[in-house]
Length: 87
Image (cartoon, rainbow, N blue to C red):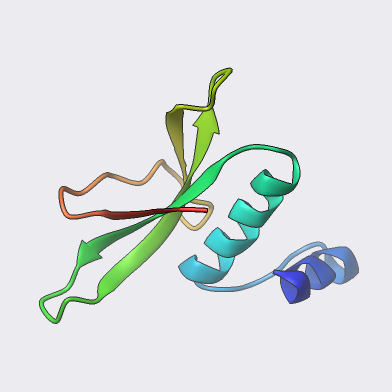
């Protein structure tokens, strides 16, 4: 995330794939005290995952989750085989 933040400071933009952007987003949420977790979705036939995005904890106890994926223009879909890893 540090190199992506440096890029944003220097040029106003940054680039990366879904796991880079998810790591940056989760880090930013955690810094301001919001729980974050990763969702890996769309498992391929070989068992690898094709996409990852984050969810942010909502509410007073942060027990509800909002999907966040800055790599797509709409909230990501949940898939039944998603794997969740909370930070």
